[in-house]
Image (cartoon, rainbow, N blue to C red; front, side, top):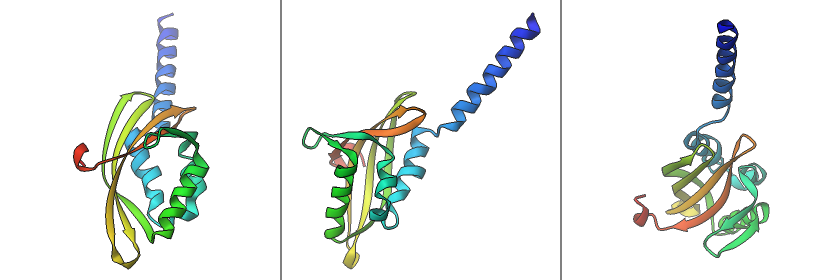
Length: 148
């Protein structure tokens, strides 16, 4: 009997470890899976970018709920018209609220044609949905006011 219980606990422990390692930490996910998509021709990766969001996103800037594909592709197209070339993550502050919810304060370095560089910051809320991190909410934030 003791061996059966020990075996069950051992197998359960392996299954738990396997599940935990299958999902990247919120910090790793944001840095290596999401942020890197903005590094080279992000307008060609709209569908891949959208796959990191829930189907709809709540934009705190205007308090509206949007279809993520329309919201993101429209924003990227506007930035491209303004001469935007790419962005890179300059700073990231992650707050893991619980195992399935995290917030991110991100500072982005934006590169524009003509050599112009600007910075902008955003706040994101992501939830673990079916074993995958998805951004559900966004707000523009002032970099200095948030320690970025």
